Length: 500
Image (tube, rainbow, N blue to C red; front, side, top):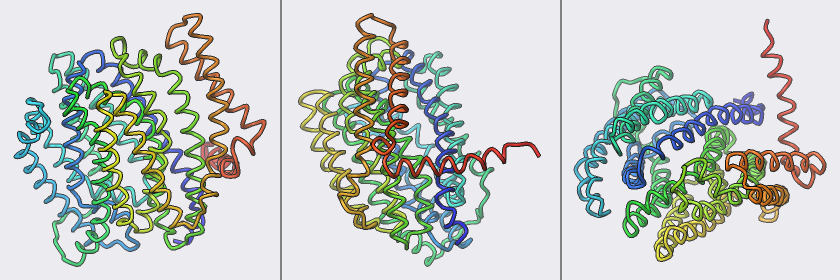
């Protein structure tokens, strides 16, 4: 354990690198799928599928009651914990699948989407797949197999949504093309996880082991339910009061903006949660890790969000094709909250690693209320109003979770704000260069794809030059420290890559 702790920073950087590389493949697969499916399916079909996902993802939370993260976080893990965890996940997945099947008509009636009941019932197989593979995923995460898990997710998503979904859509299955893709993805993922990460599968129900897993899992599950509701209640409100077409538009704009934030957040969380759990009794090390993660996250996300907001019209046209102009305005508004949506996931990692899951839970409950309030009042101004209300709620949640992290790590607010200063300076320079480039290119009416490529080059070059000329201003202490660590790891990677 001491050797692992001594190399924790290096292991974290290597884990983030390989996880990011693998999840980049997942992001590419999602973009390809969106490019194809947006041209084969209608907004109403996307909206119906999005409504089904709201129910599926919410029910999935209750499948394990926090068993998986409890397995990851436990300092000592016995075979009985794995067997009890596997048993609990199987039983709960069966119960949830049956419950969703029974209440599907009532859900469809409540959302005023008559076709939704059949779609939700058909996707109940997803619960069984996830329940069977739950412990295998947790064991792999505990073993720090970050890159393997991300590769599995990317590959199975590609098979489901890049290969299977277009075939189904071309065959005229409509919304069932998306449902079939989801089933294909989850069935394949379950098989790969069970084969690639063996663990004891004999059923066992032991009170002590179950209590040890569920005590942590209870607080985790409450927070997760609230967090999920906060990320989905806006879609429920849009579907309920604005209809399926508006839900399709809002869902796509949200997906375009939140997918990069979710990917970055997942990369950081998958690595930081298990590694921070190793040093959960060392606040000083937690403080250094949290501040460095916050600074690195801001350096990546803030400049990117500015560029997305500036190039949103061309981005929508290239990714979705003609007829999706209504996506542009909500996309630009959601871009404002990209950092807040990403960075609060770091606070999630800290709270789970240190066991303060109930303090996290009540903050997420407040998050649900603020999102619902913002989305409800925003819907009077249409989809753009909902987007603005959601951004306000995400910002408030970011501040609440930052307060929790600062309390756990002992970091001051001034130090926390200072960690974001280099990113703000960098985003200002990158945004200015992107704005000038976009203005000039629009005047000469270049093709949207050409515009995006040129703006990406201009923004990237301006960012790199700024960091090279004034690293203290545009990278800060944490950014420079991260670069030195990466530079120190490079020779080791080169040595390992040489034959012999």
